[in-house]
Amino acid sequence: MRILMAGAGATGGYFGARLAQAGQDVTFLVRERRYQQLQASGLVLQTPQGTETLKPQLAQANSLTGHYDLIIVTVKSFALDQVMEDIAPAVGPETLIMPILNGLRHIATLQQRFGEDRVIGGLCKINATLGDNGEVIQMTPLHQLYYGALDGNNDARLQRVDAALRDCQVDTRFSDNIMDELWEKWLLLSTLGAVCCLARGNTQQILTSRGGEALLQGVFSEILSVITAEGYQTRPAATARILELLSDPATPMTSSMYRDLTQGFDIEADQVIGDLLLRAKRHSLATPLLNAVDVNLQVYLQQR
Image (cartoon, rainbow, N blue to C red; front, side, top):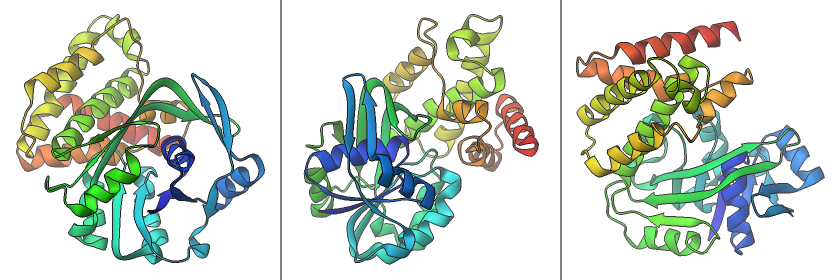
């Protein structure tokens, strides 16, 4: 299977490297700066087990040739419009596109551009970031990759994807209910991002502060009400596990959006929080805490 990994940041770099190490034909589509960095130093993985370096196959938008069987999109959500232009020449009659982005807005955007039958569901769970020299740093052993047909019909095309991905040295989950997994990932990451960005700290600091637990639970409840109104079929055991994970004061957690914010980078405010507010408005839901978070993030973006 010919695979194009659109992006070689922490997510794309890690999972693309594992696919390449498993013998898959993987090409990384990257911008000029990242291209030069990877050409010079290789793709470096720093994991709890040690450091690994591989020489990746690289391409830039103007050098893509031929069609790919699978395109895995791993850029930040605010870069989606540009990456759709970049990957368009690589999309052939049989190409499947698997986005691993935060939120859910990107699915409809990709379907509108490339067709509903081309886009499949995907998400990852990994604690990773890029180091100062562009190395991919995996902070914990967690490295899960979920995928499946958005309508639950994992046909022969999806079986081929599973055959390519399942032996890539990561914990793969071939799901027949990927939409619920996507809703629950959004519930987790948006709650985490909201409270960390609003309070400017990790969950341990928040939970040990006066009113911190009430803040986290209030944000969680607002988000759960929104995604349920939008079609999430609540799985009580799953949502309870998410709240329990977030509410553990012994485990300090932060979101990628919070880490980007503290470094002065652009953030996925509209895609992670703003889209929830649009959906809440559609159902006349009151979400005062999410509104406070959204204002906070908008002010940050104005001040960058």
